[in-house]
Length: 414
Image 1 (tube, rainbow, N blue to C red):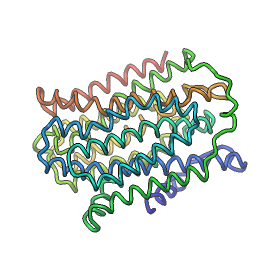
Image 2 (image 1 turned 45 degrees about the vertical axis):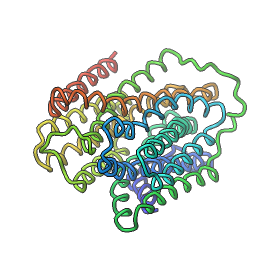
Image 3 (image 1 turned 135 degrees about the horizontal axis):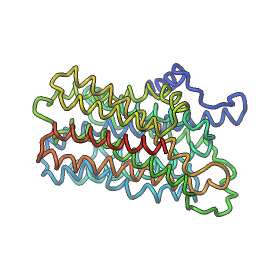
Image 4 (image 1 turned 30 degrees about the vertical axis):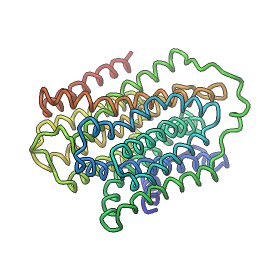
């Protein structure tokens, strides 16, 4: 509950204006939906990051063969990636609430089953359940935000949503470790179940979908050229941008491809990752104000530059202080990329009654690319690091991000 209070406190303290017309009943309803969306995404990311560090320790201790260990960690993205587009389309047909609730319940079931898992195949199944929950939840929740907010309000809404996501990623690992050490194996997962069920209750009680959904007229799912270009750019940037987060996860995993002098204690790793995601969350308000002046694409390009700077620091890092500097760059870069691309993709479906039927599909495409990058890039980078070494990998990926940034920048100027 303290974490949910933290989300609301940050939203207020950073001065985020959720809606432009808060005095109206409609504005208050929209603001409520945005806050609930932030709490829901917090509960999913809290659950994933509570489980991941414990899972890493157990898998390393179990002596699982590399291919089995890789399957345990990749089961999430293997299942979630192909589910995002069907999940988005189903949310267009059935409504957002059923898919949001189904996704949250799958997260809750996975958390409940995890402490009961006793072998490698149980862990694969639990991770697959989480992936299925993500495939249903994320396209639906972001499509809901895009259809209850106007273009002008979209950045505010996605910023609040990202605050919930960032805080969940930041506090999950530390909370899981503390709960496990003090109360035993079941407590971290009971807390995850409680957060997921609380989110389900909030969605059931307080979210009402637009009535226009029941009166749709079978609009075309094909995007006009301008919107298709927006979605393509958003997907291209997030694919390479989320690869940075994926590399960081692989870097600090038990099967890391980090250089020997970067092997750190679990406590230091947790602090570095938590700092990165807290920076991600805290900068959302400022990035939204900046985005209203420079646009989504330029903000995303700036995020690529910041991530490249972080990887350059990682390339030369030999001390904890340098890793802290790296986490500041990467947290800021990922925050800019996430806000810019999410807002851009959410606008790709268009605005108004005619476009309600394709918002879920559009966000499903976005998250398909998101999870393809999250799951695929670490595999490629891990193989390359065996040949060229980890430091050269960081340098090469930083250069790649700069190339993508130049391409995006050139598109912005056209």
